[in-house]
Length: 495
Image (cartoon, rainbow, N blue to C red; front, side, top):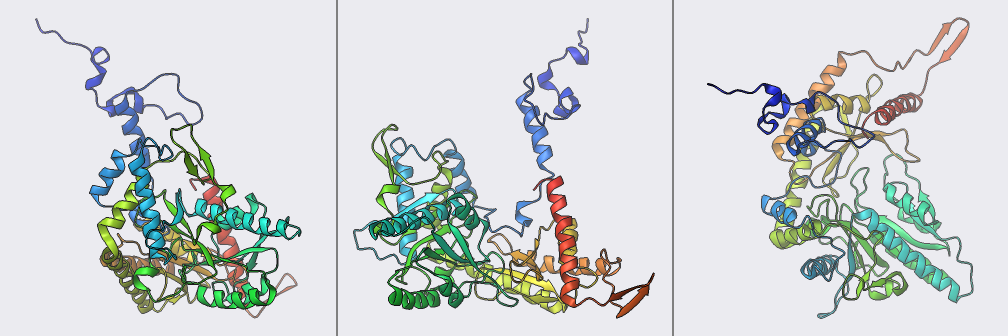
């Protein structure tokens, strides 16, 4: 006799996930389910939903590393369960972090003796690093004001309007006024002369950007240092400089070694850099380095012993993974100076290939500079019918994520597209992107304008006279409408 089972009676472990009941209902969104499901089903269903995410390698909006060598991936996975804060439990990981701090400090020309160790710490990213550096400046300024018997309740920082949002977060979270130097069309970084003019006795530091998020340009830290030194000599304030080198800190030392922006300048007291950008590590690692021990107030450092031995700590968070620290050390010793230089030179050359390809179309103005972060920021020469937001939106059909955005005050009427060139963006991809942009432009030409810009000199309708709008008025109208369109999409979807 042949024995058989009905489908419902058979062992569920032999079923395909797609033949099971687990794909017949939506996954819970707001409440934890009452019952468990097999691990295979949970993996398959979540993995399938994640297919709707964009391809990180084609996300040209991001500066963050999206590829590492398989050997480093193995190191990351082997350390994924280590909590970095348990320094007594994982002393080798702590040692690797200290090695990274010293290597980066020497890279930034910190004034260290032969046996002197650098002052710095690994962070979750440059946002945390900037918070820590800002707190150090604020505390040093407050201590000095208290000693002088002067008010210490109104600290401020001077920056350019092009700073990343983490500076606005620091100012708001820690009650520091942010004094921004406005931009202007054609000049999209902080003007050092205007920045120094805004410095007063309550300024805890001037923040310079080595690699603007908007167009990749390096700010002139050397000129800022010289101008600020003159003002300090006249006023006796001794206002310092912090360099936000989140993007440029792992670029300038290798392809612009003669550029003075780091601790070679006496007023630069601290520098942050993102290991997860051009430090070539996956997201989750940043670094902040101080010039000397005196630049980091001792009262900001906490000492704990409930994890074992005495452990000094200066971070905003507590627990964090060890993997990114280990990955940073891997990259530093694996690539060395030679490897980093070769990668950065390749990125710069591929940026030039993309720039030249866009220029040959005759349709774009290049906003970025050749020297700086390897990226290409560009805007349409004629956006009277279709604008940069439409180009960005249509490029997603080909898988490319290319952001379109408006410049900060006082250049809000300028809209640009930006392509960040990372290590894994090859020349072939650069050439392919140019071809896809050309296809998008061709397709847009066949479509009616989404926003009508009426350019008649005067038009009589129902007794009302409409005057011709200026080019800037038209551009601002289009930009405002598209910003609203993009924001509505973000609010209603995944941001």
